[in-house]
Image 1 (cartoon, rainbow, N blue to C red):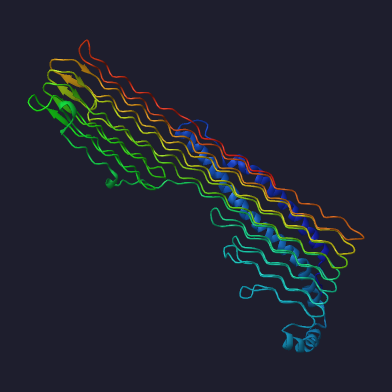
Image 2 (cartoon, rainbow, N blue to C red):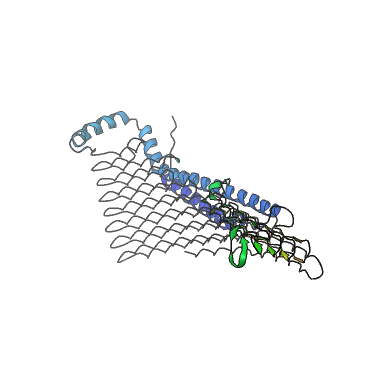
Length: 593
């Protein structure tokens, strides 16, 4: 019969190499995150924005898969480390021809202490289970602590703590945490001799914008031995992109029409101004302005007529809702005196686009366990988890239309024997500001290295800080609306003046890009022994995330055309001015740890 012999030292060395390979991949993925997830549009058109969004989405999907692979890699390293000790114990027990006799003898020896103290005198503690996650303590005299239970990835439960050894033995390793939960702490080594158990890995976040779990602390040694290594912090998950809801219209937000034929000063008949619309709530379009009241004057009752101005449209609600339209100016008619048509109301501005969600922060690395009180090396601190990418903002809402009379040429005026002047067209509403990109999640702080023994030993190295996530891209600005044209007028025996065109709405500002997440600080190194040993090296701080690009501006509106005056002495209306356009501001880069 042949037996399998495992060398724990060789398995531990292999686990270290695999861990170094994982750290290199983690660093490469973090470096590529900013350049692949926050692409700026090549131009202000919709096609360029769609292409940039497509490639950014692919980059974010890769980062999410990379985070899942990192979690699998960490669990594999933890299992490989645990196998170094478990393999040797299991194979040695199976190869012994006196196994049955050994179990009988130990059963008799352990029975009294098990009955009195609930703990064997000699033997390893049982590993944790789903029902009882914490590993059991080892024998009072000899025995290693049991390993803590590693929770399923989606459970959200903390990993079980490793069991502690008794007089002689190693502490059990802590179990890995579930989604966004902390890893279990490593068990204490034997109070006479033995190493502390390694802390469990913190779970990666599974909810958008969620933070990674903290790594478990490494167990401390007793009188003589090395402290356990702290567990790595889990990675945060990317924030959701801002998504504008489908806007709805509420007629109750519209302004009321103005009153007609209200006696005014100097014998004029007037129409009152239409009521302004009311601003919509989130996802609700702004209310329309009410129409201005009409004015009609005849020779026997009034000298002239002035139409009421249209009410202004209201700003659209948050989430890219459309601004309300301006009300039409009231028409004016007079048989003898002058007639002045009311001006159209201004269109409301579009609502701001939905902001992107902030990326989740990386979990804090677990602290390394202290070395033996007399002699021993401190355990290394665990690396902090990487912060995640912030979500992109969505497009701003479209501005509302400027008010006029509802027919080409806008709000009219008519007089038989006097001047007639058309009302000015309402200004077009400005586009809404694009949603701001979400801030990148901050990297987790590396765990502190454990202190060495009082007399001799090296201090543990501090854990590396996690990298900060890249900020999300700001959303594009909304479209400004063209100004309404000026109104024409009619006079049977006199001159007419054309109304001025309304100004075009400004293009919506591009949303501000999200700030990159700050890199996590490296953990402090542990102190060395008094007589012999070296101070533990401080961990390297994580790199700050790249700030997201500002969104592109929307399309500005054109000015409305002025109406023509009639006869030689009539005045033509002036054309409205076109709107302005400004791009969004780039987000700031995160600070290095």
